[in-house]
Length: 209
Ligand SMILES: [Zn+2]
Image (tube, rainbow, N blue to C red; front, side, top):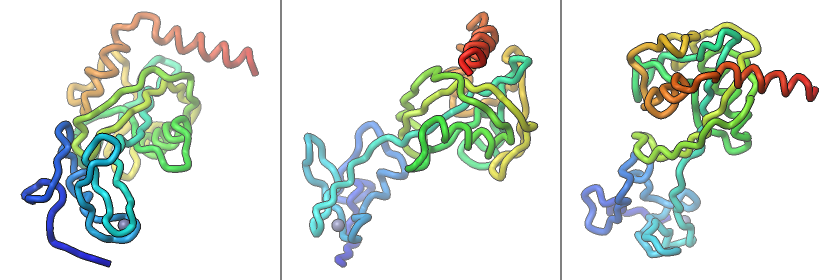
């Protein structure tokens, strides 16, 4: 296994390459081959300079992470929010969300995250949106935004949250992180009949089963 102190990432290194739209921690740390541990070298592969291992040929393709987010409504049409106890956005409220595990579907991921972060069981009613978040401080991601219906449990904060609760869309807390308000919640507030759409979806599902 070959080791070298030469930085690859362009963060003070002469040999480095940079990712013009993204300076996330993930990309800055991609210096060594995850298969054999040798240094990655900036090499042109499929039209871009990427980290390529000189020993085993592994190419470190950098792709956005996949995350799932739940807009979970209860019978009163209130939305589930959790208050973060960790960075980023420590102390801010947000919609429950998290990264998809390698063997999970996006729907399974959102149901798991909603329960882990907010203590609520839910069913997925449909896909509301797919957001590309290039400026997430951890890594760029595609976020699948699911409309979900709460089916059980009481709001209860998980290990990385300090509070959890349902809020009317017309009376949301001020401090909402991740641009959740601008990107998602404000659009729902303006959507008249959103709760009715949910109940219609529920009825359709009930009739099918
Ligand atoms: Zn390698």
